[in-house]
Length: 309
Image 1 (cartoon, helix red, strand yellow):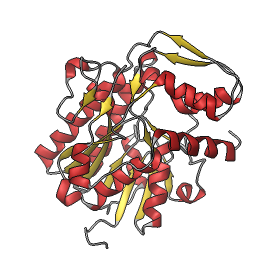
Image 2 (cartoon, one colour; image 1 turned 90 degrees about the vertical axis):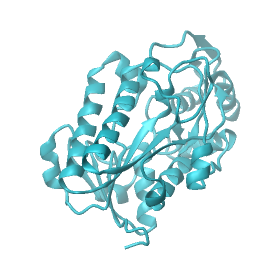
Image 3 (cartoon, rainbow, N blue to C red; image 1 turned 120 degrees about the vertical axis):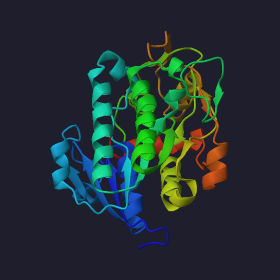
Image 4 (spheres, one colour; image 1 turned 90 degrees about the horizontal axis):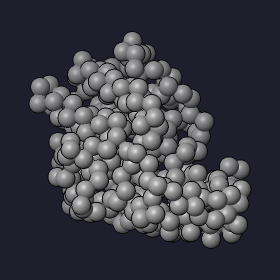
C-alpha cells in the first residue's frame, strides 16, 4: 500500500473521457483499479479489462463489485448540458447514480470519496471569474447543473451523517483524447475536417477549457493528498478563457478548413461566460495546468487524426 494508504480504487464512469485517461494513469502508477460503466471501453483494452459492465441506476449492480475499496472516484454521469435540457430524465439518472454509489460507500465503509462536479454550478451572473464560494441555487441554469449542485449537497450530507470524507472537484470543459461526443471541440474538429460550417451558439460566449492531462493530474493530486485536502471543493481548470468564436477560428486555421463560422443564439441552459479561479487548487494541491489551449487543440487534432476520426 502506498504511503497515503490508498491502494484500491473504484472508478465509476471508467469508459468515459476522463475515466479512461484516469484509469490508465492510475494503473501505470501501481494502483489497483476497478472500473464500472454501463458500456464497454472502446478506447483502451487495458481499461476495458478492469471495467465491470453494469447499470449504476440499479443498486443490485453492486453485488458484482468487491467491497474492500480504499477510495471511490465518482465520474459517472450524463454530462451533456443541452441533452439534459431536452431530456430531463437524464438528470434524474444522475441523482440516482450518485445516491446509489454513496450508499455503496456507506454500507461498505469506504470513507474516502471524490465527486466530479462542474463549473456549471456557477451559472450565469454578472461575474466572469469564479471561485469556489460562488455557486448559488438561484443561478442553476439547467437540469444538469441541478444534478451537480444537488449532488454536492448530497455528498456533504453523507459526510455530516456518516463520516464519509470527500473532495469535490469542479471540472471545466475537459477536452482531448477519448472523446467522440457532441462536445464543442470534437464537433468543431469533425466539422472542420469535412470543410463544413462551424456553428457557434452565442457570439460572446467565453469559456475555460481544460486539457485532459491537466484534469487527470488534478484528480491524482487529490488522491495522493486526500488526507490533507479532504472535505474541500476545488476547481480544476485552466484558469483562462477563450471566446468560442476564437476557438472556432483556431481549429479552422490549424486544419486548413474551408468551413466558415455561423453564429446562432445561445441555447437554453448553457452558461455564457465563465473563467475559473484555480487559486485553491494551486494552494492545496500544487496544481498547475501545463497545456495551453493552442497546444491542447494541436494535440487533440493529432489524436483524432491518428484514430481516423
